[in-house]
Length: 476
Image (cartoon, rainbow, N blue to C red; front, side):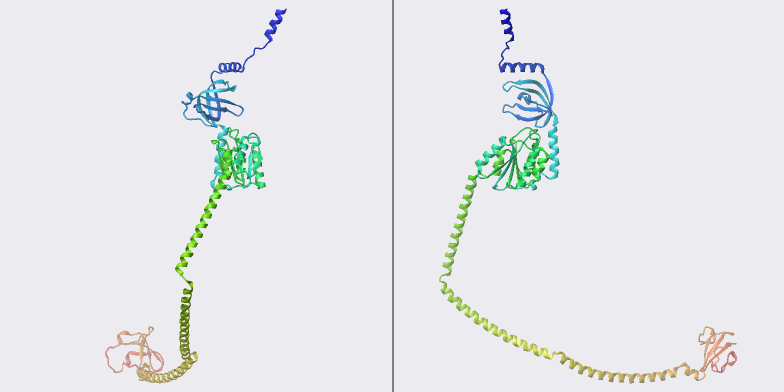
């Protein structure tokens, strides 16, 4: 019975293992269970050690695993991988015993394309850039020395203490107004937007600093959100963004008025060093004093030079008094001569005006008009008399050659009917043609019974028949 009890007690006592033994057992189990795996994931927190090894995390929406790719395998990469890149890794699962973490030892890595977060980041970046949120002319300048700084960061993060330590070292008298927010995880973006709105509403700070430490792409997601980017762009107060460790760029960095690579660099950009500012002020003061002293010395030198050139002012004063008297006398004579010349000119113009007075001209023109009127009347009378005599002579001459006077002497004018053409020759008519004879008193209508040429002045009554009343003779 005693032997059986002791044996059972020995069996129930667990075997003690060290941490190294347990870790080694787990490593052996994992390497035996997963000798070769192919994993699809997105690279995050990529860094390259001095030894040349690549350390990164592979992640998807639900989980992540640490991975390492040693230098010997890195030589076969077509191009270096980057954060946010979706890759296919082939290798084995192992345990890193110093930290007790399991990891994927990658032997081969090939690109699968950009991860979802990286693609969303690039799409949002292109859209905001097209809207002008990254434009240089929209950036607001920082004050040279702000009276107050609004710091938006996590109250428990290292970024807060880095910024405060640097600010105290550079210019400790400038107060820092802290707005505590979450800088990662759900609700962080909303808190950052609210803190920016609060700082702008209070208007107590002249510059806003938004900062946090570095992290993976998903850790920095609040700083890559559209609402935070638009809140920074709409801020009336200049915003300085200091996120990450030199190489990290977020959407907030592109929209910010000034981008700082780290929180410490943000404090350096916002605040000048007090001792440097004092030294600069002392240098400016010294330069100002020296400049004023040079101006004073130059003024004294010019005054002394002019005093030597001028000599005793009393001699110059007597000379200028004599010159003034001479100029006054010349001015007096010149004015007197000018007045005399003006008086003569006035009298000459007065005489000229009198001679060319409208009344004088009117009287002269009236006399001339009367004389011309008499001459016109005499000329008109003489011209009328001359025209009357000419008319009388023309009337007598016209009376002498008038056809009516010829008819009065017993002649007649023969005209054909019905054309009423004057008959000048016997050949113009034939027997049976009608004629009308114009005598002094009346018209005789008759008909031709015969014609004869060259008959002389004797009577030729036999060739004409009387056809109408009235008496008259026809001379042939």
